[in-house]
Image 1: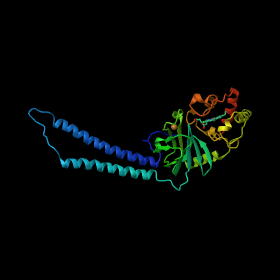
Image 2: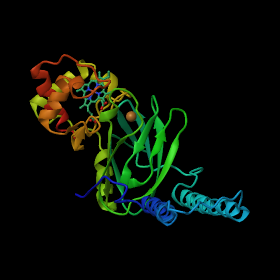
Image 3: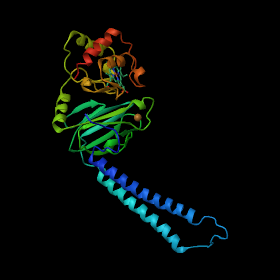
Image 4: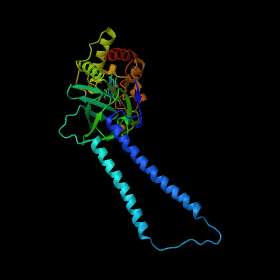
Length: 309
Ligand SMILES: [Cu+2]
């Protein structure tokens, strides 16, 4: 898998346009810098103090003043036109369009809902390559900001004010990002992982996510279901096919299919899962309490949750 982490390696058509605007602005600025610095250096040398030479004095110069007002005005107007043009290309209004994915930011994880296929997931965003997609952003609590550099645009996620982003992914890969608006103590561990896939791979993924959770396959895992029901997990988490009243924590129906746990805080291995269940607060500041599980209970839960592909 290729990983993309920088605005300089754009992964979407929109990010390519934004990068183009950046290079235009950079080029114009570099040119102005060269002219101003060059003329200053020239004046420093050419008109330095010499014996017997008095500096020229004059009161005003209308031609110069008109010039140095007009030229910057032209440059700024040009940059303004470029900015407006790129903005209209990259993020036109979304009125009347159905989003392909709604992302809901929570302290300190991302809830995902694909409305058309009817899939709920969390934290790891799977998207197909080559299709223009509309993402909608909502907040469940405070202000967050969705920032995946190689997707081009940073977008604020504000309570009561949904925002949107158009994306046309150009190549498969993993695009890494993070929440970039301080949203409380767990903010530093609120990562984003966008997994861009071919249409076939994406459809396969959607197909597997549409299934309810697999029933426990072994005795250990069956005991895990019991612990899950008893230990308050169900008040916060949902598992399709088991219980679905939990709304304030990541959906766990296919938790084992994710590469990471807790919004990128841990790679998803049985050891890390048991570390998480034993003491979530030691991994990151978060809204999951330490539930005082015994070693046995942790083992049962790992057996059960680890099977939820
Ligand atoms: Cu945040």
